[in-house]
Length: 294
Image 1 (cartoon, rainbow, N blue to C red):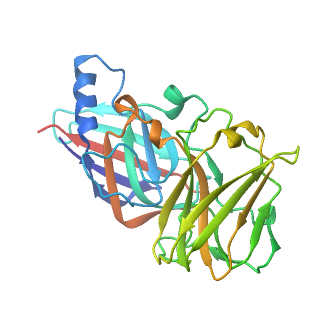
Image 2 (image 1 turned 45 degrees about the horizontal axis):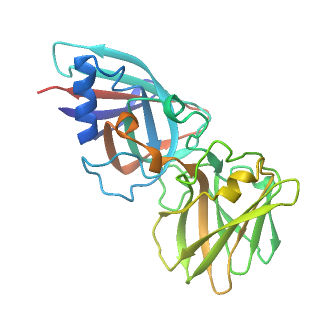
C-alpha cells in the first residue's frame, strides 16, 4: 500500500506529501475489505507539530488541531486505485505540519471527550496580564517559522507574569483522568514551573503544573486531567503564571484524548510536511488522498 496527500486551494494544487500507512492502518483496511469494520477513512485530521517520528507504530497526531469528515471516496482500475477527499473549514487559521486519516470521528467513540481546543489566543481582548508583563504577540504569517501554528496570535509571556482570561466557557465533565491538557509552546528560556489555573464561578480552582527548561524549539507538554479539574464543572477563568527568571511562548492550549485511542480509532495514515501548509482564514483547503494497492 502506498499513499500520498495532495493539497488544493481554489482548485489548484499547492503541495503534496507522501505518507506512511501505519500498522493499524493496514489492519483496518484489510478489515474493511473483509467487511468486519464499517470504514477505513472516515475523517482527515491536521496537526501543528511533528514531535514523534513518523513510523508505522503511530496511533495519533502529536497536536491535532482540526478533524474534518471525508466527503467523497472513489475507485479506479488505474492508478491511483482509491481516492479520498475532504475539506478544511474556511474559519481555521493554521500552519499545518502533519496530516493523517482516521477510521472514525472522535465522537463515534469518545462522545463529547474530543480533542478540545481550549484557546488559540486568536481573540486578544479576552486576555490580559493581571500581574507582571507586559506580554508581546506574534501575528500569523503563512509558512513562517516564527508564526503561530494555530490561530491568529501566539503570546510571549515574560517572567513573573500572570496572564488571565475570564471570558472562557468549557468543562472537562466528559473527560477522564486518562486525558491530558496539552500546551503548544516555543522559546522556553530558563528552568521553572509554569502553572495553569482553571476556575469556576463559585471561586473553586484547580492548578496543573508544567516543569519546563530552556528549549528553542516548538514542543508539546502535557499534564493529566485531575478529578478535581473534572469536578469544577463549567470553567469560566483561566490563568497562566510564569516564575522568576523564566519566559516562554505559548501558541495553544487543548484537551487531548490520545491516551484513550485504541486500534479501532487509531491513525490509518500519517504524513509530515517539511514545508508547512498555510491554512488561511476565509479560504477552504481541499485535501485529496490517493492510495495505491500494489
